[in-house]
Length: 265
Length: 213
Image (cartoon, rainbow over all chains, first blue to last red; front, side, top):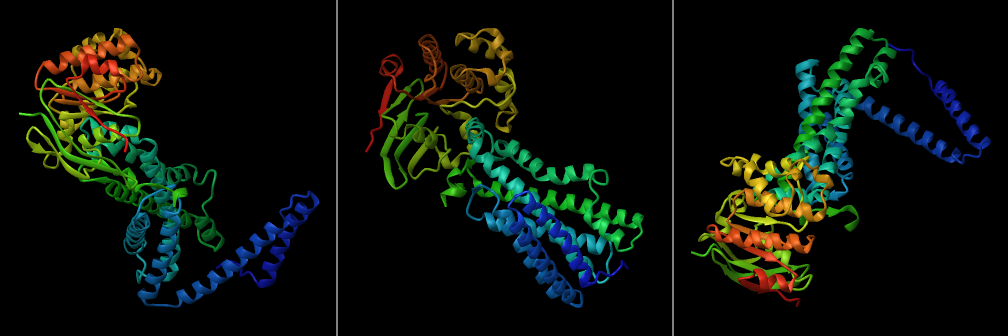
């Protein structure tokens, strides 16, 4: 176990924040208020989540834990679907389905197959892992969906030229699907490239601070990174395929009238 | 038998009736010119004939079969639409001409390099155009390459949306001569949007006029 942190120690750390407030006042940056608000919000949110997690960790039935996971997924899908500038009816449902299926599938496989937690719904493992997976999947889903629908607007001429020459909807959309998936996977791939060199991942750092042996913390991190990569690949792929299905019809037509710019609404 | 037939087509845009009771019969060898002021929906009519927009009402038949009963890639390989602003996919002109031969519907065809050269020559292009980068082409040159790309795929009906709008007089005449010869060479016909009254004189075997309502 790590050294426990008492409330007076938290207050002491909060004093460090006064350093940046003072600096802002001295240099007339006008950031004092923002820093205070951000500090108070962060403290309140984390204390609240601590209370909730305390309660959740004492549960030993899967239903409330699954319910919490579902609420987290809804919030993630909501965040993912607010990103794309070109929207279509059913976009929220499509992003929910993609985030839900890929995150739950990958988290479930990790808990029961890779880490082999008993029972599989043990909140101490399920909630943080699902949180990390959701965070990453949401980024992949949001980026690839934004790229795909944006490209369908910007590169409509190219898509319809190909359709006009006899391309199937799949042949005409394929270059755009490929670009969207690359865009969705890019943050995860980039972070894997520099992991351990430029950045020390938070989960690994946390485990080491909590007294875990570095070798084991590193292995945990590697497992998590593969899971995150798989989930963001699966999430990006499924959301792009769902959008493809929504925006092309069975007569190999691009239904661009279903796309609306965010400002038109 | 008529190549392409349209009956009772109509189209609304944003609640406004754009055209109604549009119909024609296109026989082999014909060159139908589609005329009408800007905003009368000429491009939308070509898109409907190509099956790129859903038909609101009426019927389009190609070789005696309704448009809906065709598999669309096979239909569009025969009734080929060229948008006003041609998009060339590929690094060089040769790549752009070769690209559609990778589509499944054209898998029976191989890229005929000699035909490509001679078509481009008929359109007044020099032989080195094949190696040019598509990004550096002018609007008119891109139109000529797009027309060549379509002809190499051996369609039966060409739907041309102002295919000569960015061309100079000589190039326009070359395109017209090429199309006049092309429709005579088999079961072929052209529908072409045009704003040029002289072009009507030189090329049209029939005229379909849309008006603004």
